[in-house]
Amino acid sequence: MNPIPYGKQSITEDDISSVVEALKSDFLTQGPRISKFEKAFADYIGSQFALAVSNGTAALHLCALALNVDAKTNVITTPITFAASANCIRYCNGTVYFADINHSTYCLDIEKTRELIQSKPKGFFKGIIPVDFAGNPVNMEQYRRLAEENELWIIEDACHAPGGYFTDSKGNHQNCGNGYYADLSIFSFHPVKHIACGEGGMITTNNEALYKKLLLLRTHGITKDAALMQENHGGWYYEMQTLGYNYRLTDFQAALGLSQLKRADDGLARRREIASRYFEAFKNKPYILGQTGVIEGHAYHLYVIRIGERKVLYDYLRGKNIYCQVHYIPVHTLPYYQNLGYNKGDHPVAEDYYKECLSLPMYPGLSNEEQEFVIEEIIKFYQGGIE
Ligand SMILES: Cc1ncc(COP(=O)(O)O)c(C=O)c1O
Image (cartoon, rainbow, N blue to C red):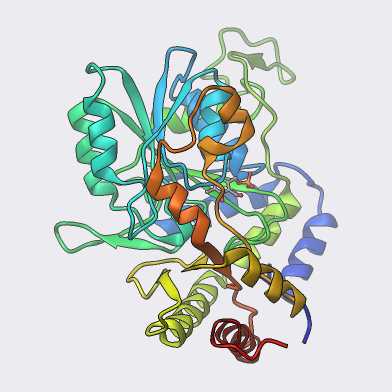
């Protein structure tokens, strides 16, 4: 059996020809494929605007800048996420507050978020960054209500959830990142994600003013748009109007993203099939303390089980060429955040979750045979018979 990772890109001949075609064209960066990819992605997600950037972390950083995060800004996020969801606030010298996760969704708990907001004077917090962790869609309608009551903005970190959706109070499906409830949403196109660009990211929004600000910030704060410029000396002229970055995606990465996007629904369907099989295999096993399960609208970037003896199982599976992963070490317990004064023990649901969680192999190219091997080895580990 070949090594089985927890996540993996799938690259087809069509993907390769699309990239080769881009490489043979006149544009390597910011060519026609960028806007095509942005348009196709916005259509897929159902947002008005989409802005392609160099990775998901850059997307978060630009969102924080566009929302004017600075040293006086306090923002709430979840401890169970990739560090970048919190780091984007630190890039702008803001302060991160963590609220604990919900014990069954493993996402930011809205009631704990509300309690945290109410524990401070009105106006203390400026924003919330909920994360559709593992692909589990956060009910953004509820967060919107909370945000409106407290004058907060929302950045939805939807890196795990392109194609995911929740059902709102009117019975409508709301796609993760569609801009209906969140001010800004972000995605990553890292190879283990649903759509791979190598590195890559996208910001989606329905807010035109924020979109225009992001356009400037993505390219050094520079514009060549005559309508926006204070002066115009000729065809070469540009103005740098704010301090921005170079967070552009290249045209050949966009070519790969565009080609991958065509198969996004197929990939999602396969992820859902894999999730159902894991759920069936583990549903009555006493040593499985929890599992992601079958959830409508879930995008299944990850399939998580909760188990005892996690490290022994993890090492055992590695010995069998099965490379599971742990998502995530609670962000507030990481040395950088510890050095800033965050305390272990402050978010017990997240910390207990971390002791028991394991992400099983989950990617469209995982074969039935490989999945059965993973399941058998886990069952063998707990029911005896380990060589
Ligand atoms: C939840 C979450 N947010 C942000 C990021 C950052 O994305 P990237 O790796 O593209 O910078 C990731 C990806 O690792 C992620 O999983």
